[in-house]
View 1: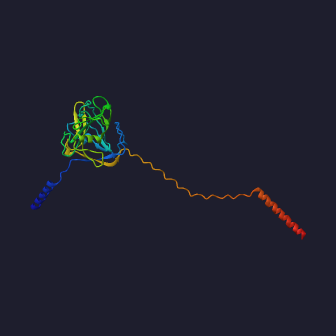
View 2: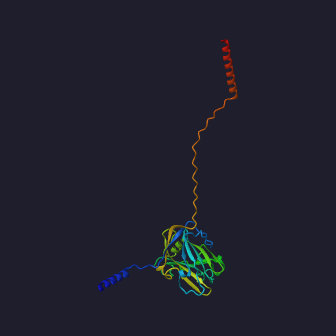
View 3: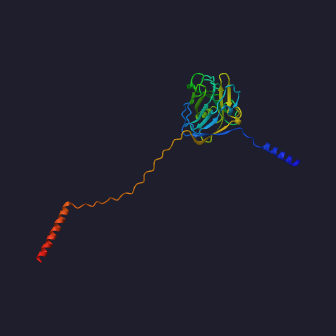
Length: 300
């Protein structure tokens, strides 16, 4: 019996030692936008139909800094993605109980309330290295004013604000929606500047993306991240572009089938009615014939 138990323990140890490590990565599919969304800061339900939606409520995130009292990203908050051959389209709906203190335009925008995306070249990428990751900030507004100042900043490759399509809507209690588009041409430009990969708008492209939500209550900032670990490329989630359709899909109008042609109807030949003169002649002839018969009988 002891030998059997020992054999089982040895077998389990062997299995555990050589079992493949379980990856902490999540795998997501980003569908293709049949119709590009309008970047206006309003997330129309039809525009984003079928898009990938990643939940980013407080309980769905890990936190770099403890959340202060009253700081919370509410249920229903999400970041959405679609793509086409020109852009990676992104949208965020953030339910926030507090209004943050926003940084001013022109510099790093990694404070206040907003969304960050980090793109790693591969699982060996080291954080903060512009050749292996691009780290973007997307703010619904800056400290300069209203939502017309929605802005984006990239930290490690371009290290500057970027003029890309970005619009937002912010309400009085801090909730905001944000839409933006990242042209694939920017990834090509980054590659020319040393970034180690060129992500392109083609089905099958895989990207390592970390989503971070910045939450600021006016005095304290907390950072909630969507991946298993903070800024660790090897455990960052994989996003694959697919050809699955999303967004507004135009209805293709089909022509009604042509009505079946009726077989031609043979023309009916009109039979001419006898003219009045012909009737008169016939009556006269009949009268003459009758008279002739009568005469013939008398002569006999």
